[in-house]
Image 1: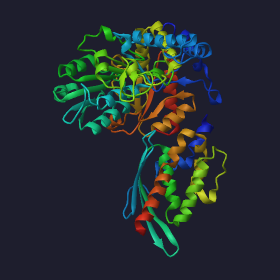
Image 2: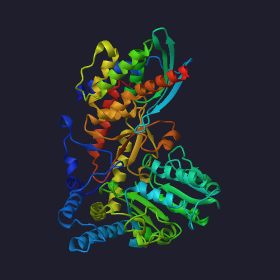
Image 3: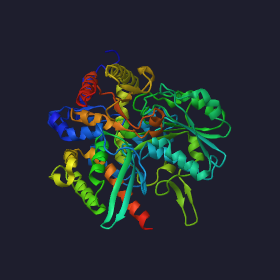
Length: 154
Length: 421
């Protein structure tokens, strides 16, 4: 019972939940999105600041205001750690890696070199009701980043 | 404990799922009956028997099985009519669920007819409604130009009726409200609100989804001015199957409303120029209806009648009072809704600062305890209390005090797990 719970509530997740990184809404930003999980009401407002550099698009900043459970809050914190400062293409690849882990029904071995603290979410994949919690901010980030790039290239 | 069903252990044996063992050998503690109730063996057996021996389409099959199926389906209607004390069995319409019943009402009021709603008209609902009694009225207002107005909620989770005469006026065409709140547990004064609404000629619609499972309802015994005009509930919350709901309506009102869905069985005759419609209830039952579900629902309401709704209500009050006492021992826990068990139903929503309801529900689930976490399809009511979501336990006629003890222990464990001091 406790071990099953511990596989979900890794210490890393609880740490991010108690002290979320990059939380709060900041300027500048090119896109702001609001995503909700309609089944439970979790919400996130998320801003993305991107810049087009010599080597392509880069995620300069991600800021957010999130309401929700420990899994969704910790996920927003880990996600922003992972994508801020990365080229957009690389960040999107990390997003794909995280999505694969979440949809893997607990059978996918996470790659720590890519996902860093994100590997702590491996246990979430075994709790079908909680996968959407872990994906909420990632989906919001992808949506905002796509929108921001479109805004900037208009 | 006073009030508990004397045959509680016998009742529990009638519900096979209650002996389920979950992952890690945990026995099921099912505290999510306001979401859906469990089914007794007699409902399961009645449905299986119908499918094995009597299955045919109804009202149109000219053979023995057709006659048997029709009799079984209409028998379901008789049982439901008796369950709610309907003055006339033809006033009972089978729908897909309570949402469809409420949508039938809100949708047909948009079309030309004696009751048509238009610009300048007002619809009054309440902040404690389930989304299924909010969205259909929002749609009606968008489609007709009518205005939606709301009863507020007091701090202790009751309807604020202090402004009733400002809210219900000559402009009011419909007053629609829940009998028992699915989130706060509040029991609302149906007669008082209906009386005021009828004084101004408004239609009174009652969502009885949470009332029908746990309160004795006798529509015929109500004074005419106190009786709702339309009343909806769903089968699966009264220990019946999913896929069937009930809309009861006064015959005169049902005859005034235009048809909802068109199709087979709801017509009198069809020509290429126009169609005329069958009398109620068939006017509102287009297409092949949920036949085996109606048969199962009949068995379900018979079971509840056999136990006695008065006894079910007393049991729910005893368990609810015990649960409120238990929850009060959890540090920091706040109950959303009335704290007096005699004025509420068996659903109790609460919050524990520092632990999100999803996390509470997940920890409880690993101990075999099933509760609901989220907004319970009542976002405006949550917003009123400044919370986004809550955890909800909901008991029923098969709930034991020991299950409440398991919940309280589970909540203590949850607090320790998340290191709340």
